[in-house]
Length: 419
Ligand SMILES: *Cc1c(COP(=O)(O)O)cnc(C)c1O
Image (cartoon, rainbow, N blue to C red):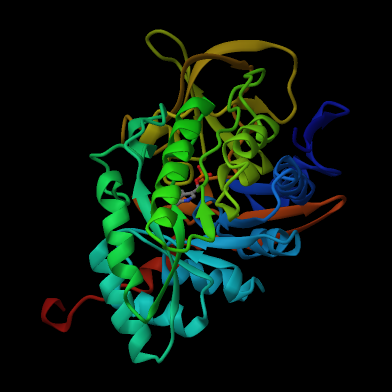
């Protein structure tokens, strides 16, 4: 459920008509609903209420906007970060360092150092080599770094291959059968507090069976470690729960996911950690765009919009579907391909799809664009970096400025030997 709905024939974000924002800020523009963010944060937390000890770390990469992080921090969420830049954002949003989990396969020495100094709550390390390096960094600072070992459970999440992370041939985590040995060796290092295991098998997961299989394998590994006399107090089950992108699509939601986790972890006696991203932010945002023109095509017309793959990359990257709806739907429908202005054929949002009839100058939105939307935006074709707006009931604010091509051009230099 979200708070983007028609009122008197005009699509609103909460109490704000989208044309008001488009008029003031221009298009394309991302619009987030604070009420939807808060709702999803609460629904996810409530779904885990059967678990005795829970830590929630919002996956910052899904939507790193400072205002979004502020809303989620106020809801009691920590942060799952994958770079120093994301860590700095989470801290700037007021999230306590101790509630931050640092994930990622390529943390640099500099990042390990910065995160140790910041007092990060947990490092999810992805190799023995990284553990050794973290140990040296922590020792140099005279501290003990809290660590979970990320394990690759060799489970196929059944999602798009480009967002699947838990198969043996993926780069993430340590091989399942080597994990206990690595954990035991790293536990002997005085500068590491080896406290748990972490797993994350992929994103946009729409079937709970692979997650259950992965979590059961993690439970078995936890028991093996405890059997060796090692302490395991934290089990990080990652993120990955999918969201419906097509209207009417039925997927397992937080409640089913929470019930499955409660069942699998019933006797774990550990703090269960989660790193949800998309399930919190996905439906909380739309990308508002204006139709530039409608151009005849061989099979059906092309609706050319002013948003493009640089603003919303998911369709080009993952063949992802985003519902496309008119801001002032007439009730008429048309079959068309929706494309952006970029000079790439992959700059296509929809192919021969039945959509609301639109004409040049009309506003429309791509729905469910709050996760992996603005965060992946770039300036390809020397386009502006897309702005972001947050709505809260009847008020709204720009939460990220449009960065104009001229600003980007101003950062470039012609060397004097070319002058
Ligand atoms: C991307 C990622 C997440 C969040 O995934 P969602 O599908 O957005 O929930 C969580 N943990 C890790 C380690 C990730 O890489």
